[in-house]
Image (tube, rainbow, N blue to C red; front, side):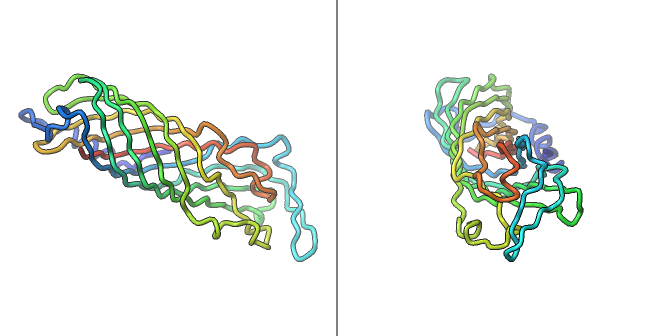
Amino acid sequence: MNIRPGLILVFLLCCSRAGAQNWGGGVDETDLHFGFTFQYLSSEYKVLKNKDWAEPYTIDIDGQDRIPSRMRSIAAIPSAGFGIGFVSNKRINENADVRFTPTLVFSDRILRYTYEEPEDNTDKKVQATLVEFPLGVKLKSDRRNNFRAYMLGGAKYSVDISSRKKTNNALITDPMEKFVNNKRSYLSYEAGFGFDLYFEYFKMSPELKLSYSLKDVLRHEPNRYASPIDKLMLRQITFSLFFE
């Protein structure tokens, strides 16, 4: 999963800023402060397949059974998304904070199914609109002029708020059009690093973070796309800009 080079360029330009020590809005001197964030993310699945995943799955088309060709692979394709959110930061001491960053995320995930017969090949997109509730601990270095590095770790709870009517497989009669669906909510653990960059009236923090679901996120349904899969684990890389 790759982060766009333009974001890395912004990151480097921000880190190169030099000059007299800025006030930073005084956020480091308050016990509780707030802010907002913009995020770019890349998501993909780790696919764990059943033992007989490659065996043809019989489907019924117009009252007649059809057996597609043998499956060759199930691959996860990285897909981009974005998010916007808020920041609540509680100061513990000079080098540690507790952060709560509820975020609205728009993200797609793609599974590619490849068969021995090319006409059976297909991509399945899993669309999600999520409200995420990350809670983490931020461990900070000592401040050096207008710069401070940090590491963070924690967990997040994600809830999919998108409409289920559009992806209800019970309403789909064509087996070739069935959806791959995820569970409505799941937990993930997170780890990352970033930099606090101090300006006169605010602090900006570029951050890179990896998250990984604790359990299977697949909603197991009897169709040709979900049945071959034992587990789907979701992993995500997020590049964020925090303004506090």
